[in-house]
Image (tube, rainbow, N blue to C red; front, side, top):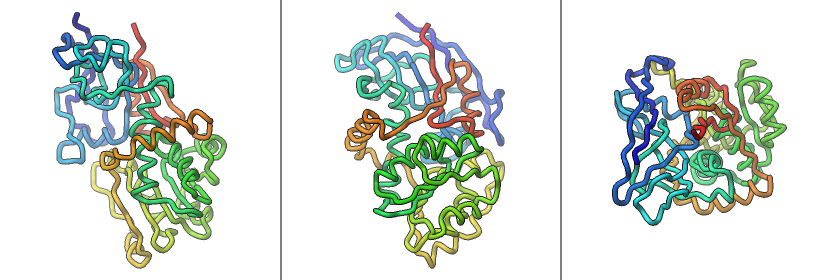
Length: 337
């Protein structure tokens, strides 16, 4: 049998903040799987900051969305039809064909997940590339050493909220996070184990960080860029390490932002600024999944989610995430009919 599926297409390149008119909501028929293929009913899909860059035309570290075609992204769902013995009907899998209700794909493009270890949606967040990004950033890109002071921007978001907890497990003596608004800042210290929470909406992030880290910082995980990166450069200790994960403060900008004024400090301080792409670190998946699964089970790792119901609300969920409305991972839940 074939499946009727609703899906989102990009129909115009956004200028500044994306608008609803940049997208089209279409209904298509998904055919039966051929040999080696499966059909997945998506149960959750992920919306993430990197998707904004894919809406632009031009070269990036991941392929741009093509105009008039269905968009893609991480999703987790249930196999409803299969022509591959290794991925049976009823199995739960992750894959990269989100932004739609049903996905036809080669079984080799799907990864079986263990819902006995954690709920299915965790494999889009703390046990997926989100958690792996945090882990690899602090293990390999900007390694945390025993006794380090660590600063994390976007700390209430999907990567940041996990990274603060992992920094502690890797030996950090003090973990500082920034978030937008008093409610989020409060959650950093009460739920995610940060020592100090900065509210960037109060302004003067450089002054706030200097006060929170009188002896400087050793590691910075940057999800924001802009004034946060500049503030970190000003208080970074000798031979500090910076993992450049994201720069969400400039993703909707219509002009290239000015460079951090204090970037020359990196020379004398011998700071290592290194870009982070999670695809370089998939070799860490088995070790990370084993450890993180255990930490989730014993309660020493807390993962939060903000869930929006309905595929029809996916564009709104993306916009809300870009404006910082989420705590933890932003997900779209696709209720079963």
